[in-house]
Image (cartoon, rainbow, N blue to C red; front, side):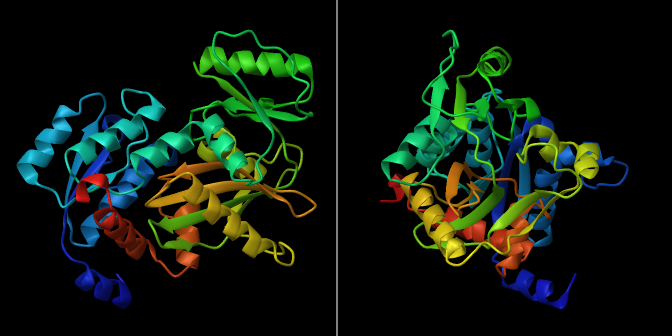
Length: 351
């Protein structure tokens, strides 16, 4: 532990922190003896929990699947200062994480991350894009194919198109086949999403260009981290999109040379414009705590907001933490800021 880190540890107020995780993602106490593939499943949980303990907080981990009663029991018996919310679903349904946070608000329990309204608006990708369009925030043109409705080609959009779930996170269901170039492939992919992911299909115009991420921290006052970029350094034959394999398959990452880093050579005025655009999106979607805005930058320097990701991956070494480090927030201080924002969030019950 560095001298600066030891000093920060002395400055942190000791808190009782209840960490909420998926019951299958409770991490072990050590990484020893586990493969990279195993660690990847619960790395964010391990990094957050182990770092909170190193910061001398009193930490309890609670695995949650479909029973909110155990959450209330832990809160009633232990009275945590804050719940650190790492849940991305409830009862196996991605959009139900907002209800867990709503429950915490009903219990008047401070928590980290995004509020229920922000989670609802951003998780519904179609609604999110409608809100962005209303606020004149540039986003790719799109249509939605609802479940149980026969897919038909659309004349409203121009090929190539990107087909994905309207609600799922972590690139679930996104692959190279998600980029389609004709009516037949469009119909096939829409049906794939509807049948396999059991959700509406969102179809948007594919923007050929650079894949950028902007991480933001804050409630009312926002801190915008440096713009981050995704690149494939060993292949230019696959679409530059963050598929599930790009995010979660170590072997595939090495094969195509997946790297992320601070973006450079964006062009005069582009960086400032992108940051302002992302702040507008953050506020338009009523986000709080921390989030990442995903964008595409075309050859003309136009930045399109693809989606907003509240409570993004907090793994040490991933995009959010890396861009935070570049902004002057080492990992432990980043977690400290997230805790502070959670305790200070002006929920309705505080008013």
